[in-house]
Amino acid sequence: QTSELHWFVRFFMGYLYGVLGHVATMTICPSVIDRHNPTEVLLAQECMKRGRSVEDFDLAPLEWMFDVNDVFIDRPEGESGDPLRVTLLKKQKSPEIANHPNAPLILFMHGGGFTVRAVKKIQSMLIFDELLKLDGDGTMMDSATFAMVEYRLAPEHAYPAATNDCLLALNHLVKEMGLGKGGVHVAGSSAGGTLAMETTLKSLDIVDTFFVDEPVVPFPTTATADDNEEGEWTVDSPSVRRYAYSRMPPVSWLEWSLKAYTGIETVSGEEDNLTLGTITTNVDITGGAMTASEWIQKRNDIDSTTLLPSIPLPRLILVTAMGDPLRNGGLAFKEVYAEALRKENELLEQNYSNIAKAKGERTDDLPISKAKHFETYSGHVGFYLFEPASFSLIMKEWYDEMYGVWQSRIRKQ
Image (cartoon, one colour):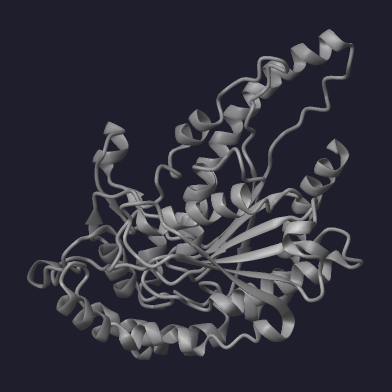
């Protein structure tokens, strides 16, 4: 069943990681914590200590490769937690952040099942370094800012704490610090991909492109889908069943993380008899991003002058992977976003044609939003290390989208 996986991933990262890996130990920990009970919090954090120690292995030499600065953002009144930490990376010896009017901003959300800070430095280093290489002469990326959001983790902070942190970071960097005048681009991997989806959905007036890498996407149950009302969601899918014992990421930990993120108590006696992957939650952790109508509704205002959508849907770069239990979730998002784009294009075709004819212009130059999908073959987030050619291709496609946005901003000045 896992023959399509890279052999190294299949053996070392597949069969062994799910049993011996640090995060696998977290499934015995409580999935719900009373934050107002210090003793309970400390005991739970001690239980999760080994699982969260994966962050200790994230040894990317960011300070050697980039200029690194931390920004601490105060939370809105009533929200718990220390100030939000956002780490800003820039090309070494690049112009000052606040002094360059055409600098793009890339906001990155790490993975880790909403409960762990997993390889955030390594992925950030690989992505930003590749984008800098693609820029060549430094025309666009010379003054770009790559921002890493250290959002609050579950179970100490359940949904929507992580999303709120990402939105807080994006709005602060753009509206308070003035970043992103050369384009705003949101990215996330695994759980961070899910956060990138919702952050983009709720920031369509800001975001130009978004990069979604192998997101955690629960599916609505039959009742939820039929009634189009609040219902239950589950990670169960053909890919979860097919790759449940490839164990990257371990499905048992995936379920535990979903419970921790949505505030569901673990009920051992009942769950022992459930098929792996079938636990449900009544919280849509995508915040509506898996519903095409949500995307359409949030950008459906028509500009009174041009009669075109005032907020066009941003361009999407989506990555899924063979051998990944989360693969079907990513493919489902592809269909949802494609449906939203189809609806947008219908509106564009109708109004753009009328305007072009009135101005005596050609009608075949319709500005159509695009979504690009890439399938990799090294399991969950494996392509960063095991498929260098695929990684470079995907980054090149995203860079080209960024460059198009950057050029359009330059022309408008």
